[in-house]
Structures are given as C-alpha cells and as structure tokens.
Length: 366
Ligand SMILES: [Zn+2]
Image 1 (cartoon, helix red, strand yellow):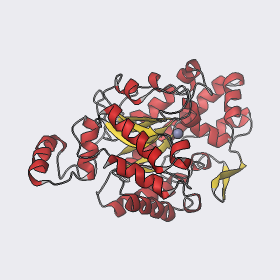
Image 2 (cartoon, rainbow, N blue to C red):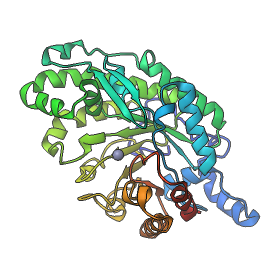
Image 3 (tube, rainbow, N blue to C red):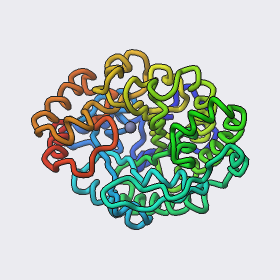
Image 4 (cartoon, helix red, strand yellow):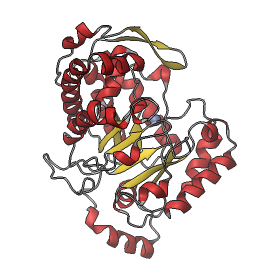
C-alpha cells in the first residue's frame, strides 16, 4: 500500500495511474534500469518513489490555480486542468474546482464573478433553525455529479500518464460555504454547538461518499483541505478537536487505501503538527513561509509521510522575480534533500501568476 501504512484498506487499492504496469515494488529495479539506459522515470514512478522516500530522478512538481471563467462546467474545468498540465508538464495534478460547489450541493446559491471567487447569492443556511435541513446525500448526484464528470474527463485525457487528486473541503469548511460565512459558523459553535455537531455528521457522510466516488472516477486520492479552519487564528485546537477532527476522520476513513491522499492545512499559525496522525495520508501540504507555520524539515522529522510545498504562493509566485522562485524552490529541495518531497507553492496561486515564475518553478525541480 502506497499511503496510510498504518491503516487497513477497506476497499480495493487504487493504484497510481500506470502503477499496475510497473509495480511499485520494482522501483529499485527501475533505478538500476534507468542508470543503465539513461531513461527518465515516468511520472507515476516518480510520484510513487517520492511517496515512499526512494530516490527520484527529479523532484515531482506541480502548481494549481482557479480558472474563474472555466470552472462552471465539467468540460471547461477538465479542459483548463489538462491545458495547464500539458503547458507546464506537471508530475501530478491537483484538481482545483470552484470552491462554492461544496455549498451549492447543500442549497447555497453562488454566481460567477469575473476574475474572482464566486459571489454568494443566497446561503443554504441562515439561521440555526435551518440546520436540520442538511441531509446526507449520495455524493454522486446534483452538484457532485458535475465534478465527477470533470474527473472522468481528466482521467480520459491523461490516459494514465500522471496521477491526479481531487480537492475535498473538510466538513467544517463545507459548512462555511453553505452559510457563506466563517464568522457565522464560529457563532454557531458558541450558541448552538449541539445542533452544529448534528449537522456536521450528514455533511461528513456526504463528503465521505463523494470522496469514494472521486476515486472511482479516477483520482489517485483526495486533496483534503481544511481551508480557513486549519489556522489557530480562526479556531482553537480544543474547538478543532470537537468540531473538526471527528468529521475530518469520517471523510478520510472512506478513502483509506488510496495511494495519494494529501492533507492541506491552509493559512498562518496552522494546526498541522496536531494533524500528523490523520490516517491514510501520503503527503502533508502547507505554506511554509506563512507566519507561525512549521518548516518542511520540522514536519519531515515528525512523520514518515511526504511533505509538499516550499514556495510562497503569494509574494514569491505572484510578484517575485523568477530568480526568487528558483531560490525558494532550491532551498526547499536542499532542506528535504529532495526525498519524500513534492515541490509546489504553499496554496492555490493567483491566476495572474507570471508564466516565467511557473517556468522557474518547474526548472528548479528538473
Ligand atoms: Zn491553502
């Protein structure tokens, strides 16, 4: 099993694309063959080796952003995703759908907005009395169906060339998209904690079913995003343990056995060090340069899972010169010795990020 060494798979193993043709256990042999033939590793071999902590020919690299105009249909999202993949030759893909669909699935209404995150038109929940309206869904119909179709199109376009992971917002982050307000969810924690807990249950069950469906549609794992709730600026660890952890685990338990589950802990002063025991995770991803966050080597010393990130998604990727991207990327590769490491910006990047900076990121890895 590639990820989640301490977990018993409850479902069929989902190999990295192409892994069945080149068994993971043969990677040592692959290196010898590569040495003899000068052959590059395939992307699937490279990702599998990086997850295991084996030598890689080049550090796997990727980046992702919103294409705000092309995230409103499965065909457009898949086309935008594959276009970026081909242009920059990523080693793996993090699918970056519109954030609002997690709320849309539970009745919130959002509208596209040029060059920006969607606008909330009407929340799915605007008072505590509405909370019981949230019911468990099958994770395959409604708003979920569109995203699953996008995954199938991406899988077809990739034809096993490289693994991709599907973004799954945590149940609490989904609650923020349903209500349209993090502050309102914080208020529910204080004023209606039991009702909120009862509502997070069907949300977690729905996301668990949807995560499984994403694997069936071809994803090598989930990219589990805590979004704003991974930060101590937004939630105390005590509240995290009560309102987030049990529901996070319900979702992650559904994808045990997938080889490439990533946990993304967003924002400043993050709670990452307290989430390293999450089961079945292949890699942890966060913004190492943001205030109060641990370094790559600090986390690498505490876990046998891979670490992902290394370049500041804001200052460096958006406005830094390409040399700045190169400098941060090389520093990250040196810090991790390029082992069990995935080079990427610390979060989704600005869609206006200069192409030269993205080219510098890829070049630093190769
Ligand atoms: Zn983030």
